[in-house]
Length: 173
Image (cartoon, rainbow, N blue to C red; front, side, top):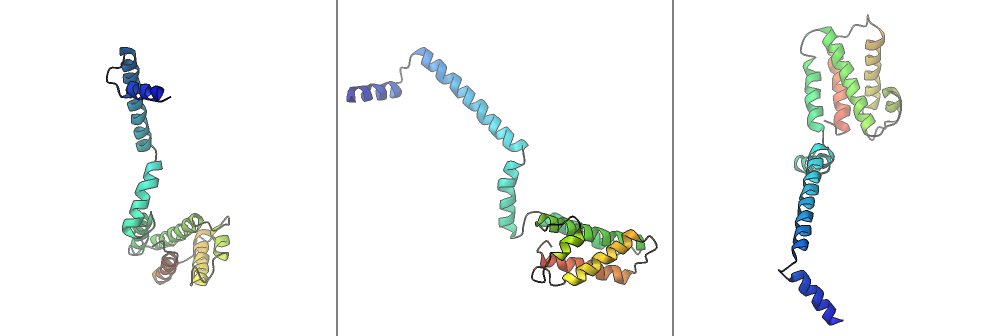
């Protein structure tokens, strides 16, 4: 039995392989490099690697959930709409703030078909100003459903600040 094992070890470690074994070994090395290249290409072309490594790394290094930077950038654009001095921009800022809250609540797993249904599922523990948010959503509904609705700059600022506080409480800003 030990002679068989010694023979196998000698065959594996022997530098004098027959030519056909060298050819097979070379072919398998080429095939291995091809598959390794394919795996690397697939990782770079799909977002799987990016999600697995880069998102986690960004969350660890910034101490904030992934995607917050884009939300903050979008929020700054919303607040910039309040500076323009045009009522249409105020209305658009309120509408976009409402849409952002809806998107974030949907992403957090709050059920419901509309933001109004999702707001009923919020508690004071998660968003302390939930009643103000509901009122801000009513303001948004007035803007959408009533074309003659007048929105002052003060009311728009108060509404956007309400959404901002809710988003901050949800740790989205």
